[in-house]
Length: 421
Image (cartoon, rainbow, N blue to C red; front, side, top):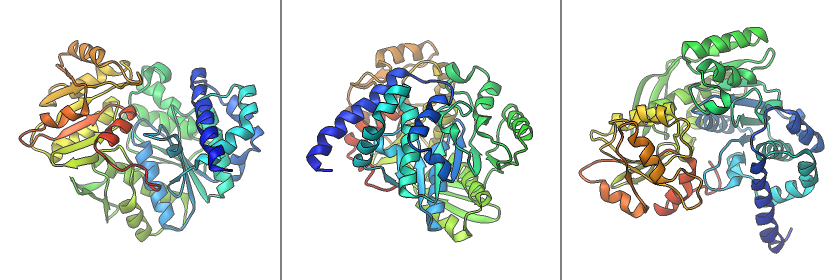
């Protein structure tokens, strides 16, 4: 395939792929199964680890990937959303899928995609399974996109299911009660399949226990790590009488790592303590308490719901003495009341911003909605202005959306996705 052919075809086919978002989110697995039939059902020939939850799926998946790679296995990773490039969603041993393979897939199956009326996520899920089969991965780590029971990734029969902390999020689609959200996430639990879960609230725990009993699945809840210390250099913690170090920052990352360790041990891969230590230390996951600058301190985190933002604020408060200056962007107002309760009074100053593409809530609207909850937010038009607020040792935290990633990385001249995570 020539470079000239690639340059023209890739942009067109990627545009075609994104256009499938107009079909929205469909509940049910029928279309995904039909598309996979057309692809030769590659998922029937793969081993999977399947993850669901509200927060921490991506980080936990990255830890699992890194540990398994340390054992010498070839590991696929399917995650969403991406930060800068679509290719990030589908990786083998940390390397994103090449443009050429995306073109190949779309050309092979575009007629089937149109016939079936596959959505964006249905199409990308099938693409991931097709690619992983081509690359002959030893195991594929699969993150649900939304929910679990009716998520298009739930066509797989995993060797193990992993459930990260479940909290309120996407209530318009998953339900307005924690129990209903938990039931959707618990939908990835399959008959006689081991399930490893983080510590959960009682309402969630009860749902998971009931679902596991219904399908005779072994269920284990992972104890919280101990002796956890965090700094701008990383995170140190103790689990099962062993000491571990992470470059990812935050007590919540120690919890994600503990879940990953338990999952890998249960999965039965040829893993030992050295593999785990090396894998955890080498694991990276962009956009999660990511340090962009140390003078002044500027951090970016994609956290966009109540629990995620609570975790990053706890991390900031554990490291810095002074209140942070926040730069907040948000996509929609569905969860804004819950977020407002978390951020109220937590910042020395709160700024809001939107984007040129119109993917985020307009900053004027966001500021107005926050003011209804007693939160004053100042509009900011340019990233150049942000560091001018970071005086006298106040750290800066940019948070609230994945859609901020590209302009954030470009502004701070931060190298992103150099090939491997």
